Length: 485
Ligand SMILES: Cc1cc2nc3c(=O)[nH]c(=O)nc-3n(C[C@H](O)[C@H](O)[C@H](O)COP(=O)(O)OP(=O)(O)OC[C@H]3O[C@@H](n4cnc5c(N)ncnc54)[C@H](O)[C@@H]3O)c2cc1C
Image (cartoon, rainbow, N blue to C red):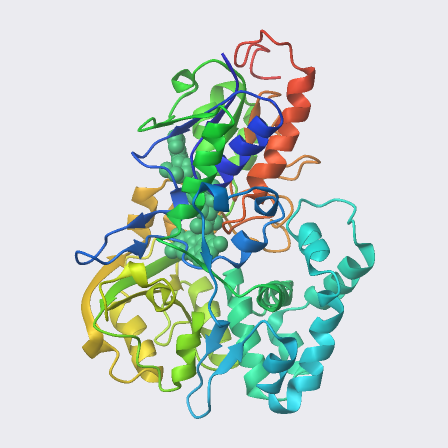
């Protein structure tokens, strides 16, 4: 019997497994699909010779993850490729704004707002890794209370309010609105400015990298490390009922709260299961992957220097597009997250050809085909783009949900991360990774600190499970405590 079983081999499941194994536990991972990776999978979605990131494409949180930074993932095949700039934000009648590692160079892009931009970020760059360790953690006493207090006071504001009051001109407002839109929230909601600040801050610490060969290299490296620590991974094993679980002392679920409720209903209190079922997942995503005949022909060619391009124009336009999604509407001019992997990782496409993807947020479970709206937005800033498309692959919310039941309604970030669900995910508990059953834990992006490929949910869940393992009897079989404890 293993000490721990982890259900799901996404970045959080594998991070949990590695942390458990490093803590001395024996671990077995069960993955429903025939391959590991979850939201980091890589596949040939279009033409022979083109390699695509099925979900995550760009990894500021991966390269800066406080847990991943303690692991020698390079020795297990992970190579980050850094672009010259993290983000490009094209505008209609002006040069694009480039978010670069250098605070000064970035500030110089912002004209009249240069000083205000420098003033906002400079204090957080004194010890950015310390601050990120506090930000990518569950609610706890911060290790860097002064920086966190300052960050919290600034970040609590809605992005729209903060951007209109702090900055005078469109360039700073637009580039930070693009960062805020990673929240998948209306930008009029509290704490959306914190999301803008986190993403911009990461860009001043690291260039948002792509993983050489595809994002799956991240989870392949975690899996390889896990095996050297004695862990086992079984693919093609879907866990649908408690009876599907092999004996172990604890079980960690890298799944949605809904799946945890479905599988563990017999061994969890009914009240807790009801709370899991009330968890909110938020909007879905509609994504296009392209095989291209050449690079994206941005009107401002400097956009090719960035791994990520935020396409959506001004603050007002981006805010309108994201709010529309929450009203159940599809914007004519959606906000797009574009990643141009082959620009930096030449192995992703045949010589002279390119890959790229873009996705926009859409109402949950939407069945609207956004292909035209997405490609029109890119054409707006890159005339001639459509003529470069050799092949495209569409992924609609239903496709995301079919490929991975964690993506409920096509929601891709593990659930709404608003003020009421950011730290209380999946439900309000002192230890959000634990459940009322002492043997059952949740370790997915539906726990703090939430979505993204950083493994921190898995790491903190593993720490919680390791503490429990110290107290559980060695010989216990799963749920031996009678389940409804
Ligand atoms: C289109 C898209 C773009 C994204 N872009 C980025 C990005 O650029 N950067 C970034 O950092 N993040 C990005 N993300 C988010 C990121 O991919 C997720 O937040 C992250 O993968 C969550 O990791 P996880 O381990 O919690 O869950 P997942 O990655 O969803 O992994 C869960 C795993 O568990 C398996 N599983 C589920 N249920 C069961 C079951 N019952 N039995 C057995 N196995 C099961 C699944 O098959 C899957 O392999 C993106 C996501 C999407 C979809």
